[in-house]
Every structure is written in C-alpha cells, then in structure tokens.
Amino acid sequence: VSAKATGPFVPAKEDYQNVYNEIARLLVEKDNYDDGSYGPVLVRLAWHASGTYDKETGTGGSNGATMRFAPESDHGANAGLKYARDFLEPVKEKFPWISYGDLWTLAGVVAIQEMQGPAIPWRPGRQDRDVSACTPDGRLPDASKDQKHIRAIFGRMGFDDREMVALCGAHSLGRAHTDRSGYDGPWDFSPTVFTNEFFRLLVDEKWGWKKWNGPAQYTDNTTKTLMMLPTDLALVKDKEFKKHVERYAKDSGVFFQEFSDAYVKLLELGVPFTTEERFVFKSSE
Ligand code: DDH
Image 1: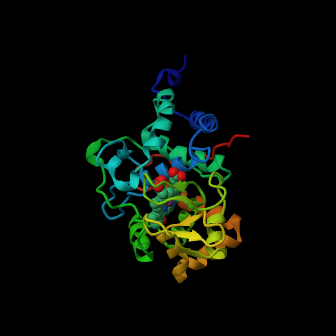
Image 2: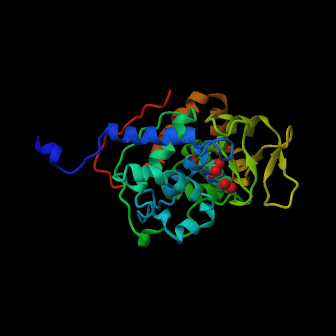
Image 3: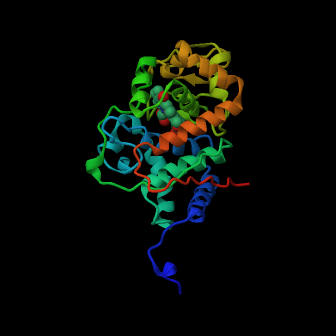
C-alpha cells in the first residue's frame, strides 16, 4: 500500500465527474417538476450563491454557501431556491467530501451542459462557512428596475457591459413563478433548452405591458404567453447593452462562448482557489 493510498482523500477530476453524472442522472429521473426539469432552478441557485459578491470588501460569492442559513435563505430574491438545494441534498449525502459551494456551482454547470448549453470549465476550492458569513439583503438585482441598477449590481461584482448582457441570456431557461418573485411565465418556448432565443425574441418580438394585477411585466404581442421583466427590456432600451443583444441574437456561437466565459467568472468570484486547472466535464449522451 502506497503512502498516497492511505493519506487523506484528495478528489481528482474523475471524482467530480462522478458527482456531475449523479446530478445529470437525477435531472432525468426527477422530471415531475415545472416544465419537466430542475435544470433552470439549479442554474439560478448557482447564480444567486455567486452573485452576492462585492469586489470592494471581498465578501459574498459562492465560497461559503451561506444561503443554507437564514437570513440569506429568506431574502426575497432567493424565494424558491429551496427546491434546488433540496434536490441536491441526496448528492451531498452520496459524496459527503464535496463542499456545498462546490456542489451548488457544479450543479449549475451540469444543468447548463445537460440542457444543451456550452461547456462550462469549472474548478473546485470553495469552503463552507457559517452563518456569520451571510451577506446583507439587496445584493442581487431587482427586476422592477432599469439599466442603471443593472450596471450598479453587476459592476459591484466586477463585470462589464458585455458580460452583463451575456449573463442575462440565462433567461432562455426556466420561468417566473407568482408564488416566488410574483412575476409569471417563461421567456421563450423552450425553457429547458439553453439557446439564444431570449435575445432573438427581445429583438424580433413586440413587447407590451401585461394587463393583470401582478407586478409590472411585459408580454409578447403575438402569443401573449411569454414574458420579459423590466430589467430584461432595459437591455434593448440601453444603446450600449443593445449592441450585445443584437450580436447574440444573430450568432448563437458567439453567445455560447461569451456566456461560458462570463459564467465561469461568476462562479469563481471571491473563491480562494489553490489550483489553476479547470475541468471540462463530459456531458451525458
Ligand atoms: Fe434571473 N430571474 N434575473 N438570472 N433567472 C428569474 C429567474 C431565473 C433577474 C430576475 C429573475 C440572471 C439575471 C437576472 C435565471 C438565471 C439568471 C426570476 C423569476 C426573476 C424575477 C424567479 C421566480 O419567480 O421563480 C434579474 C432582475 C436579473 C438581472 O440581471 C437584472 C442571471 C445573470 C442569471 C444566470 O444564471 C447567469 C434562471 C435560470 C431563472 C429561472 C429559474 C426557474 O426556476 O425556472
């Protein structure tokens, strides 16, 4: 028996690939949810765990996985993410050596790749922290606001205009729920497939205010079944943002590459990595 075999367990790429495969398997098995997939809500969990980062103080981000605790779990923006955290609990039980921060971000990678999105290179290194590391409420974006707010929130994380627009393309996935955010409906007709449809529809469709008693949101003129948030429409109202919306609407390959780069950066904000190497995981057949 070599010394290596008796030392502490140091997971290698194949161990993380095994976690990937288990999450991918559960995505197929547990299809009785929303539009048939937990994928979108996993993408949102990874984003809300990471998007609390503040570059000035170095606080927040996916290191720590502090959304496990109140008050952060009760922040309005995180309503509904318990479904995603609970979905991943059996994976944590099966692979107890992975931190919650690594598990949640890896699940975002799995979800995007399994929903036919771009490969997302990922590396481990997040350590779980206690309740004292919870971030204050208000660090995540408020959908009722405009481009100034988007720039303030994502600027605080260290993103530029191009990256902000690319990241918002995740709204090709999933839907809004009246019992979570108060908003209602999907952004496109294929909410469980990662595409550039969010951008195409922003450019090609006419969007008007939805007539209802809920919060102010837009609906498409043609079918009145889709939706856009006020912050989504801000991406075409703002000239600088709109340039990127048009590039992504035209060229899905460019969107996939720039989204992947920005999502990698998002998931790594504030994490004290000890390794440079990123893993690219094999998607399921
Ligand atoms: Fe988002 N998002 N998001 N979003 N988001 C909602 C759902 C989903 C904003 C507000 C909302 C990003 C950016 C923004 C996903 C991913 C990402 C909902 C509806 C609201 C509201 C929640 C509900 O009712 O269940 C705002 C505002 C912004 C902004 O940029 C200003 C980004 C950057 C991402 C990302 O992943 C990179 C996903 C996926 C969903 C669908 C969740 C689901 O359950 O389905």
